[in-house]
Image (cartoon, rainbow, N blue to C red; front, side, top):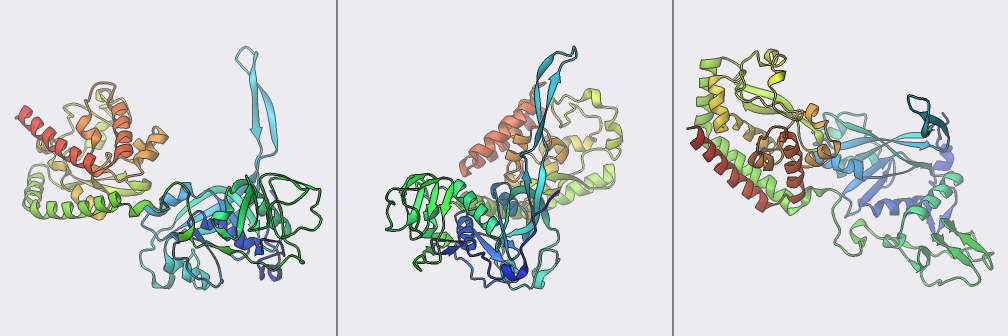
Length: 479
């Protein structure tokens, strides 16, 4: 394994090897690329001025220029209650491979398999945060992600860590800076969205504003061309490629837009942190109000049920089961206990009675359920403690059924979709399921995906109303 290493400290101090384009050092163009993603790069020990539109700060060691796909991790920054995410960015080279012939049981050739041998080129650690205080502390050199309580900032008890693929370069090293610029030319469709003073003179070809197309020069896009003009007559520039500035280039300096000013053609800017949507904020506000009043008004009912459970079935009163919430974060889902204390021991002998077609367990007339528990389940009173989970933010009034990790491992795409929202006390599956043999898990997947796709205030209200109707019909039938 051959890992890249940063250049010498005396070179890093300038954060540049002298490679310039449009009057900008490579580090500034790198910053501009991240601005197009709504992210502000913060170098350790740097002069830090917050961008007024920054939603996320990327904290990197001095000299490090790292690029990666933000989408797989930014949602975790929203779902987690922690202040930051620690990321390990790994750059790998998959050029080497070996091929093997695949044969069946009779020895006949059925195909060829290609096996890649990945060579790890670099592995670096960076930090992602939406906390301006942490960004300031990092820039000033007063905090690192290894510290548990930076500058007295509360709420940091556990740091999530993720490993993902990316590209790693180092400022101050000409080869790396040239490679990064070539990568940006190949992947960034519109640098003029952030860099002021350049224009697209033909598709994929960007030059300083007013420079126009060059005479007798053939340009195969994509290509970025700086202030340099000497030696370009009757030449061919084959993209992805850039032509940087020279020492004799005019000292014209282009500027960078703030993140808030970056235009996105055809639509309004969308936040990288989707917690600020009207529906999301409104739903959370309604959850807080509804759960508070529910617990306050139903306090006598809570007390009565607790007394009855203790009298007939002993302790514990509550059943606490670890479930996964939004973003896969685990929490203890609360219910009034409806099963015998030896229910876990009995489960091993009841497998043949399980009528579910999936990872969940459904046994009609389950012998583990106590007499009082049957009444609590029939009336859904066993779910009342979950209003505390709603108040704490673990759950919502309406959402997919909260389930443990063991169940969520089935059907990965379904798992990711249902964990993109908070689980609910009631939901679309709960009010539409038929309990038909061999269809329960399929209906669970179907209705969870439908809810995530159609989630709205109107749908939530319809589900709540349908829940009361379903409960009333159940009580009438069993009564």
